[in-house]
Image (cartoon, rainbow, N blue to C red; front, top):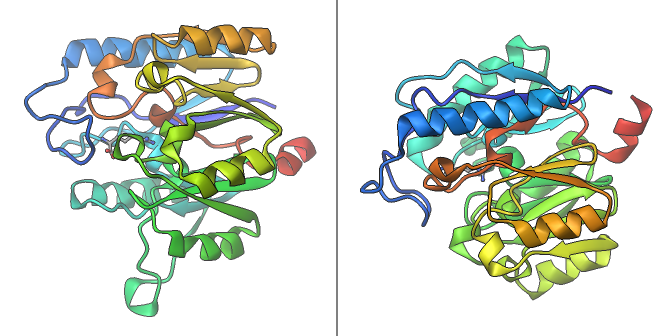
Length: 280
Ligand code: ARG
């Protein structure tokens, strides 16, 4: 099955506000370099045979490039994100329209005045490993939405608390590779979260702090191919030992915004539960 990935060109990308510890408005992103880095990632992913869909960029939404935060896609349904920070809230209607125009059934939480006022930042905070949805909370998404996600999508959800503000989205510290295998950075979780992950996933690759800081966990996985930022050599060696094919591509301009490879992509297929993948 061909992988389908949503990306958004970085025409309006920049560091215009600070909503995570990586962002510093005084450290501007180099626009030409960001474009070059984004193009290189795009070319690598297209080279896997994946079909890349492009979301038209929008002026005034510098973080729209991080399509992982568009929503959570499951089969033909898309649960649109509700951003915690006002700076990103203007992205939700853009993502909602894109999903609706591309054949997804848009599902949303109840409105805030009907008890559904949750923050939820999509695939940035919710990742399937096998049939289980791991859902990060505290920094950007609320734990109170997990029960609704479980019932809206009909999946098992394991909530895990994120305890280090540098790893504010689950996809900055956890990356499923296969049904029973994942990359992670254990210090980003509390004891309970670590036990929940260790108790559910057989094969775990822990990254070191220096590589976690290079966004080693923020990897794009297409089959056995794994794409990350540069500076993740130990992880790459471990991945090769386990039969994966890692590739490094520089993404430093996006690290200045607190994102890397995975954040710049949203799987529109196949990142879903293993049973769905197998049946299609
Ligand atoms: N500047 C963006 C933010 O703080 C980065 C988002 C990164 N996305 C991700 N899926 N981790 O919201």
